[in-house]
Length: 369
Image 1 (cartoon, one colour):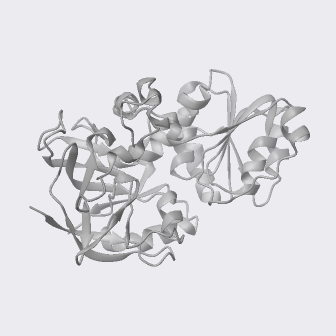
Image 2: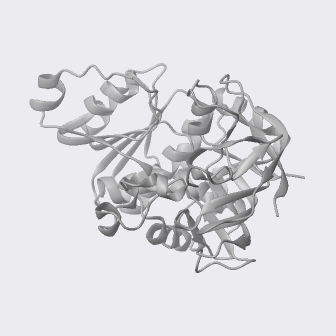
Image 3: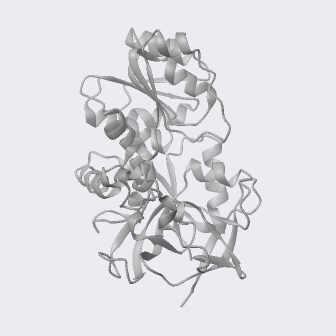
């Protein structure tokens, strides 16, 4: 039986959301039906809501999802009603070469987690299919997600903190631990002190980095960054960030992480690394974005490496329990990351605060009443 659910839909490609009722289908196959208890507001959702993607119908976004299982399809083994879970946007088949090598984030068959052509839509509005982005669709009271994207979590983990862990922590901390493998004593720069950047800063501190430099345009966010472990902060609006990093380190950082998805800051990430250093593009760039590198001066002569990172090179089933342990031990600062809890009707205000750079780490919707 389908369930009626309050939801926030992106319809116009202008970044706004409308609050409407949708119908969520009963779970099929390996699907898990989740009552959403918390869903984070991520910059990636704001990007997608503000683009014309050429996709028909309204978009159901929201990929930082935590909640409780209320039903499962016949092939969704390992889950039972009442389980606390989070859902991630890492879609994987568990059968291809990349998945079998423990690199689910590189799965070659992501559509296998979605319903096949001819099957009813997971969600609909007034009889029309709703496009559930990333297979999560957490901006609704109920959502259907493939079991491979769902991780059972400890009931000691609050739902709001679990939600931000589903993307913000997997991406930010994962970039440090999995992609860069930051070692004790190394130096790190993080450009963008939003939720993902703050997790990277926190993780760099846990990894034992000697200098952790946060770069942002907001003094409020830079103040937050200091609380998460930044040893130095740079306001890129009033200071040449590359020159400032070079001055702090003497030679550039070992690892520079770009968390925003802009051309200028991506070039800065490359140029603030030392000889032999590594730059990581983590932020979501717009389709067609170009990066005008000087191949000799930026890459070859200084022997730098540039890496494209997706979801922190994460394996959710492996990484979520580890991050939960860090949180419960007080090492992962998720309580400070959750800046405010909102009603679903406040989603536009939450994204407006994010765009205004008001020093808000992460807003989380926890009320769908």
